[in-house]
Image (cartoon, rainbow, N blue to C red; front, side, top):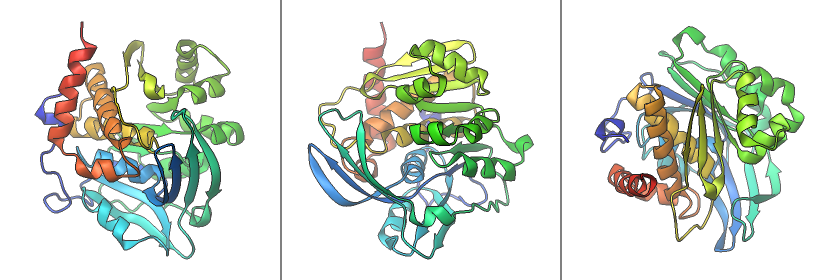
Length: 321
């Protein structure tokens, strides 16, 4: 498990040079969500895959955020991102409204019912990368695979050390050809168990992971919600349970937070070995365990590296035998 070298105590925008120096970049959505769970309802929640990812990754390393918002995007939300070393140079503002997702959870908190998706300015988004120093680590969060390909085409592969991506059932069903092109060009893909089965038409997750690896990525991570996570690293295998929690208020963004913790840890360490990947998966699980304890980014805003270390030590104790 990681030592202090995986953390950057007191890592904030104020004490860190970010913009050109960020080793990690993410492209995804920044959103204003409406979320309802058995524990409450929130009309305006700061969300989006890139928002959760950036805030989580910022616990470990500076991160460059590539996304788009509308003119209605609150200045308050920019201030929240600025609490971590998040470079917002590539956060564009376009005329119109910010992407909005409305979702509802029942007693099964592993599954969200999408009530409405308003793409808004996301329909006009054309990412243009102008990094003075290209990040070595890139995460393609859950967006249209055509946009993921666009970003890949703007990057110099020779300068990249590690590229990972996320996707969802809608893209698997409706943009499969583009998604397969993305998978052929990346190092790691993060899926949930349903998406892995849908992508491969294989009910067994072990065989499903093997089929996904045959599509291109050497590393496959399958999230299983409250049942943990599976890592397929070349021909190695690793499994972790979820961190046990008594209070889960809002699972939205847990997967994006997991990816942020994972990639933030990898970028901070610069180590892509199997041992480092296992440590980073554990850190991703720990950060995600905090996210679900409140709505939106609120729980993440309250934690520090000390909170992560404490929960990580507990995790190590009950996972060893």
